[in-house]
Image (cartoon, one colour):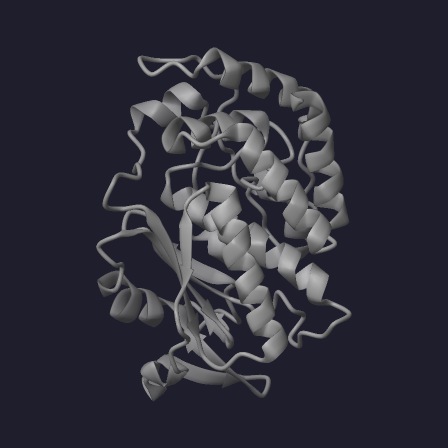
Length: 295
């Protein structure tokens, strides 16, 4: 989601939310009104921040319904994660935690596929930068991923162990996505500050679940949130990404719930348990506040 990943694909949001022909059940609307009290409005953007450089109108529930967004059905009901490269035991632990998180976040089945060797990327689509091998992200997207979304796939997200770059004149990219094709690729390399250790594991996991849920959210037509602090906020850098919570604001939750029709309270309880178990303290505190409003 950070910097180059989101800069390549710009989406819009606008606050509010009038119900159209598919009204949300009264109990769900009561839930959204309750947790809306915990939304933190965005402040005026400062130079260098996403909204300072990108003037986005926004997307409310009515605008989301009119797109119309891609919706799960009895056949397409699974999100797939495709690791690319060799991962350490600790990195694989982060991938498994991300699989669990996305299952909770979207309330849909998530499959972590066996890793494939990054030798699938030819020499012409890789290079060395400051002593590190980088893979050409568009090659992974166009030559590999676009033809591999399973028939049951809602989305396919590749996660590379190696760093990525989008074209020769760019230093790096956090990832790349084709939202209409519902495929994307990101890299764990910079999210772990180049080397994953027990000391930075929690920070890396927070970033990985943030970027993965944000990008897959775009694949389901969720656009950038301009209303409140939200995982769907656009960001220009990893430090700005670190300021965004792993929480959908009440308006973005309305959109995802309208599309996926899950149990809001169960999702919230499962998120709280995940954050507590993985020591993501900021997100556990935010989810606990929502639980107190919702119960």
